Amino acid sequence: MKYKEELIKSMKWLGEKDNTLFLGQATAFSGHAISGTLTEVPKEKLIELPVMEETQMGMCTGLSLEGYVPISIYPRFNFMILAINQLVNHIDTMRKMSKSMLIPKVIVRVAVGAKKPLDGGEQHTQDFTESLKHMLTDTKVVELKEPDNIFSEFKDAYHRNGSTVMVEWGDFYSEK
Image (cartoon, rainbow, N blue to C red; front, side, top):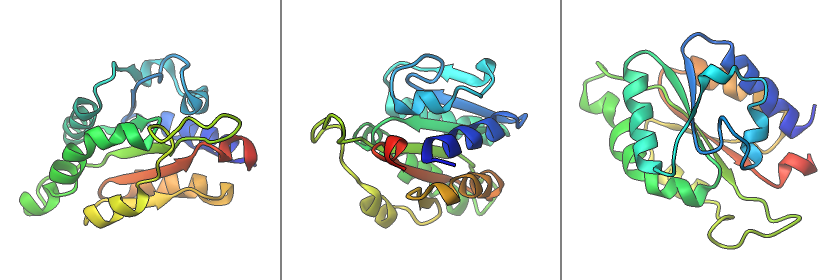
């Protein structure tokens, strides 16, 4: 299967779980490439949010502590930068701060913006993967570079005892 098809398959699988919710901009409505990977997710699981990146990550933290597995969607890494406080200072440190009494499980989907056929420019195409890996100690960062491992990585993220950031590449949606 191709890159985008594997993402659709993975989202369908996650959407079949009783405890998952999908949050972000253009989740319930079309608006970016990731929107097209949510076509097989039940509509009642798609929570459309305004542009409020930090609040979105905070909401996902709270939902995870109530037993949900939220999938927090950021169509560009540049946008997720605004949510780094919640990810680094709350999700990533909560296990340690609570002596393992609170372990949030959030799956973050973030994309490095496509440069083809149209380059979105510096504000939409940055890759902050390595920086993020240096900031996080408990949250796993997974780079989805090949279609073959996408489904298994999302399954692992769902079953993991903790949170995961899944890094996608917009150019691969049509190239691979």
